Image 1 (cartoon, helix red, strand yellow):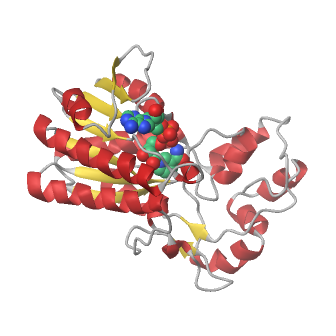
Image 2 (cartoon, rainbow, N blue to C red; image 1 turned 45 degrees about the horizontal axis):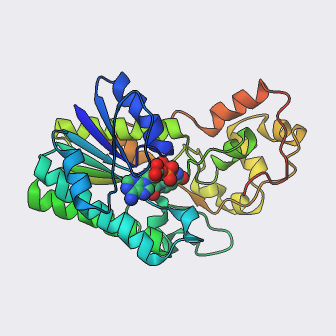
Image 3 (cartoon, rainbow, N blue to C red; image 1 turned 180 degrees about the horizontal axis):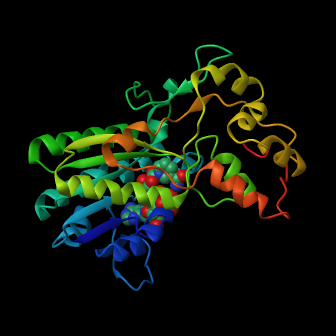
Length: 302
Ligand SMILES: NC(=O)c1ccc[n+]([C@@H]2O[C@H](COP(=O)([O-])OP(=O)(O)OC[C@H]3O[C@@H](n4cnc5c(N)ncnc54)[C@H](O)[C@@H]3O)[C@@H](O)[C@H]2O)c1
């Protein structure tokens, strides 16, 4: 398939293009920045309907990633968010209809849950599953909730199936921070790419018309771990990964920040057949083999 990636110069787009090519697809990169790439690249702005329409012409599928996100809340106005994330998504959907694509993957965020992330008590941990109310606390989360709703609307009206992937954070980070972050809503970019590919499979096979999925690393914690996760996660970690507490202490981690939220990945496993591969367990193994790695601060994250 010819697959249009909007925002193709970003973290996700740069990782996705070669994975698509490897899977036998033809990536078409679209970005407001000029891109040097071995793949077909089109410079354009998702805020401009004509740019998106001409880029989408002749493509079979769209992965829409162009957006400003959480880190941009500091230096962008609500209008900037609306223009890029909402008008941009509207333009992408209109172009999708005109091109008659087979499906669309929408980049959403865990930020759509907003207030639903807050634990009810000092000993509770929220399992942030997909059925919880979407109560975004900022304009970024709001634009993604509205974008998800736009996907549902275009699916109903034009029969184009889509999936919204609610990503955890996948910004490039130093090794130690990255690993600990996997316990606090981080996800590896390779798993984000894996979730996109799995979504494309179910959408083109026609087994999913619309759905939204958490895309996070896997954490093993159970409900009864909640009070201790809030107080001191290290002993809990040690129960699931024997020797983890000692290893982390040896590397300068005296304590971990309380864990208040977990991100169930069951729906993606059941409906997409997608399971994250880069989890805390794999990171711990790598840590064992990298004796020079030490935490720069304790707790290492946030
Ligand atoms: N990275 C994360 O931690 C994270 C977490 C949750 C959700 N997401 C979502 O995933 C998607 C991809 O994130 P990312 O980290 O790869 O983003 P990124 O910031 O790395 O890249 C975004 C790309 O969009 C391009 N872009 C900006 N304005 C544009 C415009 N007007 N027209 C066309 N292209 C434009 C930028 O040039 C950039 O290449 C985004 O929709 C984001 O909201 C990201």
